[in-house]
Length: 397
Ligand code: PLP
Image (tube, rainbow, N blue to C red; front, side, top):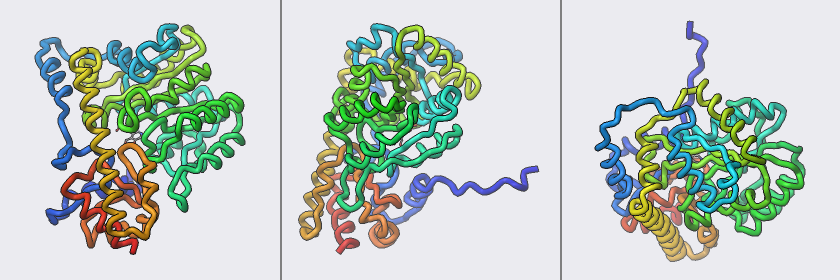
């Protein structure tokens, strides 16, 4: 019956993670997968999350199904985080939000709903982007093309090329945008550039689909949501997927959200219905436990303040490690221009020049980066950053 099934090549990043796990060398350094590690090299359990877990664990309520759209408290807290507590859009009931299975689940449900109502639209993703964007959008039936984003020669954002490309797109083309901490490049648009994108979206009647998987890890929880606020201000319809995986260090619980900003409350209630239907026919309702933990943190003022300070600490540690890597590289290989690193934000840095040396970095130095030259800066710590700089400099000399 199943003899015609083809083999799945697997996900290259997850395969690399297994290779790292099986590498017996104690000095190995994992800069491949997008996970946040603390300075001890451990995936942290945030104190705010642990305290919320104690509260949720103490509950004697039975585990019943959540509604299709998830926990109402979770959705409200998600809206306030993504759109801002005092958002006029929220007060006017113009946002439809569901709890999703991580950011990935949000992208999948959003793509399915878009395909149903915009069957002739094409989808556009940045070049490069997180690999799963193409997979999810193509899986939903869209034809996908990449827009220029990063110039591998200057190793910086190529905003002119991006803007010029967007100007050529047909009405209702779906444009996937990373509001902060671009994966894989770490090269983000500044607010003036986002304003320009918003103007193009309005002029060309494009349909933005924002993927915000790292809110808080770029410039801060509020500033990272600049694009969300700018689109609301411009009164333009859009979707936004957000993820709690990294910023709560709660990857396995699969917590995220999907929101649609609509023209009015009536439209938002129909949008919510469509999102619910897409959930119902896929997995019926999201898992409850992680969602209750996230909402407990977000809604309890004390835990919320603690969590925000923990997000700040993660962001600052990543920033410090990027500076330290830069300092180390300048020290050991001063002839090379490493300043592109300083312009990057969030969990990743991107050095396409390292891409051809990936195998050498792994085999000779035990430094695991992914094929494209993406470096997970959150895998650096005070003990391995110097060795990483030496390995990078050695392969590029
Ligand atoms: N979007 C981007 C850009 C990501 O980097 C990731 C995770 O690495 C996701 C979405 C998926 O997030 P989640 O793990 O919550 O599904």
